[in-house]
Image (cartoon, rainbow, N blue to C red; front, top):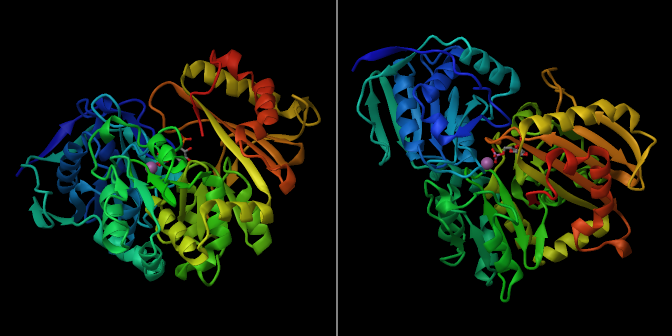
Length: 543
Ligand code: VG1
Ligand code: CO
C-alpha cells in the first residue's frame, strides 16, 4: 500500500461554524474538499502521528464514502488507531463518550446534525478533542488557519476497510477497531438512571412514542427503550437511519416533528412523546396535549435532578447559552447554584464541565446534557424525563403546571428567517449594532427598553474571549429580544430572533406563547425592521 502525497491548494471558506464545517453535499464531494479539511485537522492539531481517534457519523448520504477517505488519510499520516462505529454510525453523544472511555486523542463526527441530508442537501465534519467535546474556538481557529496554508495532503492507496462487522482490521500500519455503536452508550445510561424504576413505569402501562426521525438515534432508542426498559414494540418510530432521513428534516421541533405533535395532541395520545435530531444530540419533549419548550425542559431537569441517581447528590452548577430562556436562572437561584451564560454552541460548555463548575447545560435549540459526556445528548434527556416521571408519577402537563406555579413562566419563542440574502442580513445586524447605545430608556411598541448590548463571553476557565455573540435588548419586566445570525446554515443567512417574557402571576398565565409574546414580537420588529430589511412578511420557522 502506497502513501500518496497529493498536491492541493487552499479552498476558501473552510471555517468551522457553530458546530463544525457544514456545506452542501456536492460541495463536500468536490475534488480535494473533504481531504483538505481533514488534512487541516491533522495539521492544526499537531499531526496524526501515533494518535488514536474515534470516527462515526449520523448515516447521512456520503458518510460511508467520507469514512473511508478519513481512514485512509489517518493511516497515511501515521495514526495508531481509529475506533469506528459499525457501518460508520455513531451518534454525537456516543462518539463523545467513546473518546472519553477509550482515552482517544480526538474524534471526527461526520454529520450536519439537524440539517437535511442527501445528494443535494447538507454534509458536515466536526472535530472533537480529547475531553470528548467539540473543539473549542482556539482549536477551530488553528484548523481554519491550516486550511489556508495547505499545499498537500497524504492519503493511502488501499481498498475500502470492512466496517460492516465489529472487529479489528489493519490498514497500512494503522489499526481499525469497528465497534457496536450502542453498547458502551447503553452502559453509560444504565449507570446514570434508575432503569428499574423506568421499567416499572412501562410495566404499569405507561406509553411512549419516540420519533427517531429516520436518523441515528433509532438503533439506540430501540435497544434501550424497547429492548431494555420494556416499552412496547413499535414505541420507537422511524427507527432505521436513512441517508436522506426519509426525505425529512431531522430537526426535532413542532414544525419538523409534526407527526409526533399530531399524535400527542390527538385522540388516545400516548403519555409521553420525544424525538431527536440527525446526529442524536437534540431532544424534543412533549406530553399529552403539552409541548415542553427546550428552555423549560432544561429548567425542569435542573429542578428535579436529585431524583436521578447520578445527580442525587446535587448539581455543581448549571449553564445555558445566552439566547436560551432564563427559566433555568430561576431554578438556579432558588437552589443556590451558579448559573453560567455562554455563547451559542456546545463547545463553550466543555471548560465549565471539565472544571466541575457545571453539571447540567442546555440550549434553547433542543439541546440538553450533563457532565456524563461533552456533547448535548438527546436520548439522555429523554431518559432523564422518564426517570423523573417514574418517580413523580404525574402527567407532563402537571409537572409543567407545578413548575410554573413555583418558579414563574418564561414565555419563549424563536423566529427563524431562513436563506435570507446574506448582505441584507449583515446590514440588519450592523444597523442594529449601531443603535444599541441609543436604545436604553426608549420605548418600542409600548415596551420600555432597559438595556442593550452585544454579547461577549470571557471563559472563566481559560480566560479566552469570544466576541460578537448576539445582540441583546432587555425590556421592562424581565423581557428580552436577542438577534443573531446562525452559524450552521449552508444557504444565504439565517436570522434568528429569540423572544422572551416572564409571567409570575399564575392568574395571568396563558397557553399560547405567541400571544403572550405579542408585545415583545412587535417591539423586535419596530427596533430591527426585520420585514423591511429581509423582504419577508413572516418567519419561516417558529419554535
Ligand atoms: C444551532 C443552534 C445551537 C446549536 C447548533 C448545533 O446553531 O442554535 O444552539 O448548538 O445549532 O446544533 P446556529 O448557529 O445555527 O444558531 V446541532 O444539533 O445542529 O449540532
Ligand atoms: Co445535532
